[in-house]
Length: 393
Ligand code: PLP
Image 1 (cartoon, helix red, strand yellow):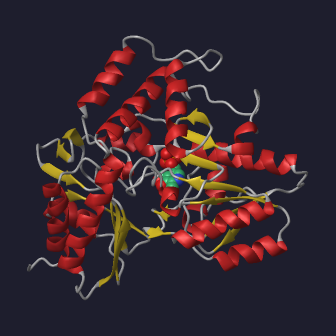
Image 2 (cartoon, helix red, strand yellow):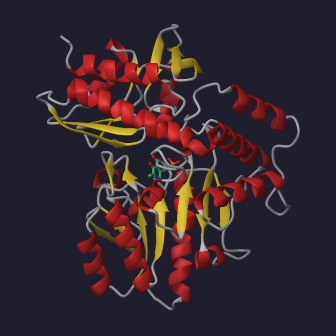
Image 3 (spheres, protein in one colour):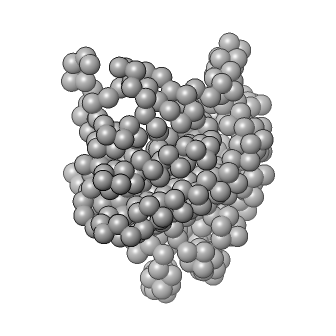
């Protein structure tokens, strides 16, 4: 491998492998070794690698029109906005290029909402162990001191409470008149694969209504079928005011979106927010093609079934393993918590089982397979995990 890594800023602890091609849930490295991809580029390539319909959409659109600017109407953007709104129950979309940017747009909506309510120091309620991105505002919203360290002073305007704890929310509501919004993930992914309970999200909706807070749901990782429904909040049957999306929306092509409903959808007016690349014809055509495939192939339903299958297989193989504390998940977002730090499993899984996994919170293996995995691949993921943790099996 070349020594050119030294020319890249040292932001990622990179594994010593480079992939040269992919196909569906498989990847091949530069030596031709095949790997089973159980992370999908961290919940991005839900339709698999080298998806031919996505490739065709990119090539066709690249030969027609890449970019104009948001000073003009962009039919692909309007189509994608309408389709995302119909799927989510939202009413208006803003397009950007990443998850952090989608959350930035949400946080700007919260500020506008607060200022419109004459709240001088508007605050957003956020959760412990959350992850919302690495820009300065989303970093401050993120509940992980390790990723914040060194970037102080953090942007003010956030109050943090434990996740999935409605009493803590009610306590803040009683004491803090400056809160104008809440930002929450339906399942904390980076935070160790913890799903909020349905009752919590429903009660949170109620508190938001009582106090005129915007309920903002970070669906960057959970959105677009990952948890077995189109969006994670739909498990709770609630209607948020704002949601953020990115990751799977482009299957690897950069695109993010902030969607809003009701009064939140009317907060932005020209001059408030913008993105040069956001919502360009190429990105939005890719987004429309992603939706075409997900709708035609019923991928959210498939993720629900595959997730049940994966959880059942993992529980059968590892449920009584002495080091396994918990096996949990929602759809194809699965965590296996161990009783000890296990970051070394990433290398072992790659080198010994030829499978790509991640570890979050130090002790939880996280699996995010592509939604297009067939049953045999789902079973294979469970089997390789079992061999990884019980080599004698
Ligand atoms: N929000 C959540 C829940 C995420 O999981 C991530 C990324 O992992 C982000 C936001 C940030 O997205 P991006 O890396 O595209 O800025």
